[in-house]
Length: 183
Image (cartoon, rainbow, N blue to C red):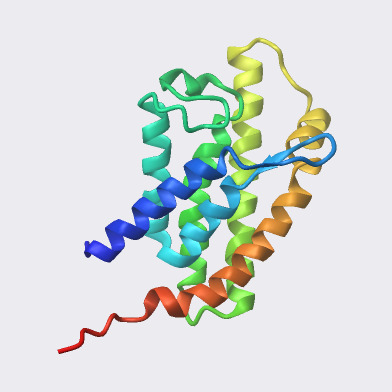
């Protein structure tokens, strides 16, 4: 990897950690900016590098750094919301794969961001349901799961996907620009 790639991966790892603590208060279900930064990682860095930046974030949190919204440590895998962190990794990969499959048009960026969002929610909700049912012994029904883990949270995340697409369209040419050295 080039130095530029390592810097960008590290930057998005740090931005994701910071995004966990930037909470936007909205009625019923406040949300964080984690999705924005994990999605932007896929859009700007591509599938592999974007997913690696999010994977490093998750590994740092599991190693004990309190960078998740609820802290950190290996026991976090038993939290019902840990599935969303897994979803961020896969979502960043899919977003990057779609965004970089050809010329990154606005339509392609939006498609990638929304596919990534769908993956984040699918994995997050599945994990929530499984942990609630089999680990916590307090099963959640499909209707409450869909309401609390999707319906109330997704409107803000849709806005973040649109924002990530707009930022991606503006920033991709800057990031992909080759640095020119003066002689």
